[in-house]
Image 1: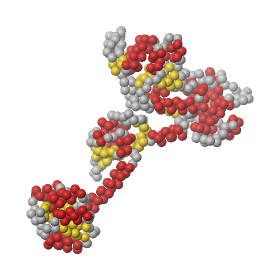
Image 2: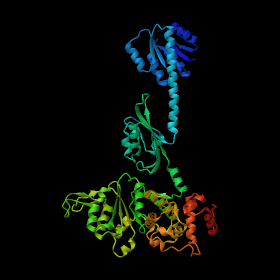
Image 3: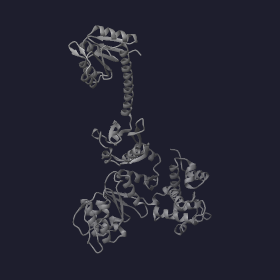
Image 4: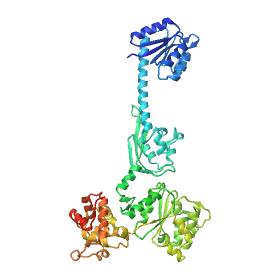
Amino acid sequence: MSARILVIDDEESLRFTFAAFLGEEGHRVVTAATLDEALELTGRESFDLVFSDIFLAGASGVDFLRRFHADYPAVPVVLVTGFPALDTATEALRLGAYDYIAKPVTQQTLLRVTRMALRFKDIQDEKRRVQAHIEAVFRGVKDAVVTVDRELRVVQFNAAATTLCEFSPLHLGREFAEKAKGCSGVCLDALRRAMDEQTDVEIPRFECRCGEGPTRIFTLNIAPLCQADGEGIGAVMVVRDETRLHQLECRLDERGRFHRLVGSSPPMQALYDLLEKLAPVPTTVLVTGESGTGKELVAEALHHMGPRKAGPLIKVNCAALSENLLESELFGHVRGAFTGAVKDSPGRFEKARGGTIFLDEIGDISPRMQVRLLRVLQEKTIERVGDSRPIPVDVRVIAATHQNLTEKIRRGEFREDLFFRLKVVNVIMPPLRDRRADLPLLVSHFIAAFNKKFDRRVRGVAPAVERLFMTYPWPGNVRELEHAMEHAFILCRSSFIDVADLPPELTAQAIPAEKTKSPADPDTLAQAITAALTQAGGNKAKAARLLNISRRTLYRKLDELGISLDP
């Protein structure tokens, strides 16, 4: 392959000889007698290889190497000398010379060094091209890309990693574990597994919150980096932000569930939106609603979808404990505080440190306990029973009650200041009778759950059961529905649950099908059908299965009720 070569020497005979030998090989040779002439040539022309004598008139080939290599580090320079010395050769190689040869230079030596230097340049050029492409991809990719060494120290990261994962130049060279202190730790655990097992690790769609940023939905892929002999030298981690896609999918599906809450009706969609806003913040929340509406599930959702999910979730039923026992349970006690207190014991608030404490049935606590709880909310400290030493506690408080606290305040049974401390945000759970459109979805949910629990193959409920569910007032709400379904699973011996399988309090509401002349309330049926169609994405066959009716019946009901499927 032809190359452009510069030969620098103050001896004309050597310049002529080098030019002749290299020209015979097809190379284009340019010569220079002085350092200034050589620098002028390299300033206006490009070269693939340079031969330079170390001793030039009034200058040194090492001076040329130093100045040339600073501007053109990719071009190999071979130094030639008639007086070889170890210190000179060492200095030349330290400054970046490709090789160092002694005079007299034979044609064989010159051509061998030329071939090796040009091959070296081709390899280096190819490496730079590949590196440039990699760096362009590295910079331009929207996913966060981070590489670590075998000790899990951060080696490199791209611009997206600074945005998505809040990496900064301060993290370079430091252990990844230091960075992981500000997030969920999922990436660190996955990196360790990838390195220990030398295998790819993929974690689809997990929640993470970096620093003070919002909670995001990420997908993680990690691949170990290995040498040719298979020894691990590090890993590359790719983090993809799928938050927007997740949100769009949730809205397209109308979110039939949120954590363990089930329902796609407008009241439940409004509830999910509120919980999404509340999950990432430490605000105290009061959950109100009738018994059986799922207040405890709200506390679980807020905890597990928020930044405290790595901490404990401690639940306390305030109505199940006496005043003295509740005080000890919540705040702990010291040895000798009361009869039987044989050792110090931390309370639930201390056990919930870094996490969430859920105070269920808060409306049942005594006035004295109300005062103590108010102090905890105000000062973020507790005192164990029998001790006056304040103990700081970092917990999020979620309280719940089925009682009307406003009425209790009016009667002097509940402190107004505590009420407002608890009710920073009030989450109101809708009763089941106000969201009957969720009944088909809830029934399907419990059928799946109890099929798994009892190892059964129940496919659905009979039309009469469906009508009964739609007209029943559900005073016990979702909990009552769950118990009714479990009761029916125990008694049912066919593929479909019938009215006879239900608890007596429900069957008392049933009207024999042969005696009734009108269907269930049209508005209620319309809500149920609309909800099923929404859940099925407009697929009428799937909606009919959700409603446990035939497709022909569904078409008839659509005509009778005047339900239009047009947008």
